[in-house]
Length: 254
Image (cartoon, rainbow, N blue to C red; front, side, top):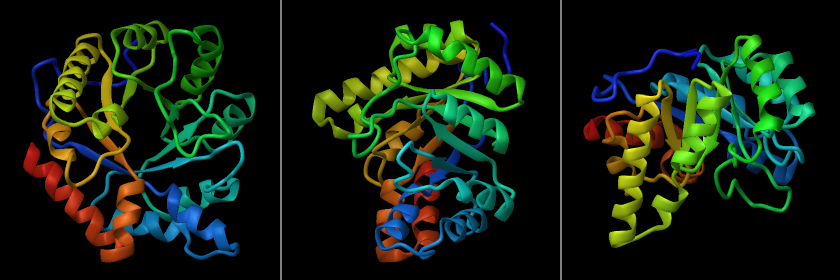
């Protein structure tokens, strides 16, 4: 496999677990009323000021939150890397190639869903994904796949030669008791399997103050991407305080 990104060894613990903050729902609130307020660019600047490691934004087909014009503005506003979540479509590929974000995370997308409801079936969509992955990589964009923590999907990521996978943690977040423990073990096992095969594992979806620490403690994980919960907390305590608290919890888990 062509390793496009350095990763830690299977048994090492990265010194710093990166926090990427998804600012989509700042734009959701803006779009609910129209106009320019609240501005997701201001959110990106706050994240940068309080020690966030990256900005994640999902440009959806229906533009329900982030808009095309937001991308360049976000890139210009901070020195943080932009992780563009995108569907595997020709339109989104062209946009990614035009803006050249630091990373492009390919996600499943259905118009009728409220949010991303599961992982990408990379194994079943190899022929569709392969040329998109290749063109993004050729442009110097770090490609990741948002997948369920399953061996079959990791094998597909290996076959596609992507340097990063992001595990969908929704099943873990919604489970309780023994079921949650089983999901956590699955995440840990798949993170180890990814690293063993030269892929850097990330995780995200449904993570909160109450459930983030067991995930953050998985030593192979290099990055967590968290959005909806932080924007919700920001309504009550401010975005800077919300991000700082999440950062504290992640650091304590390490």
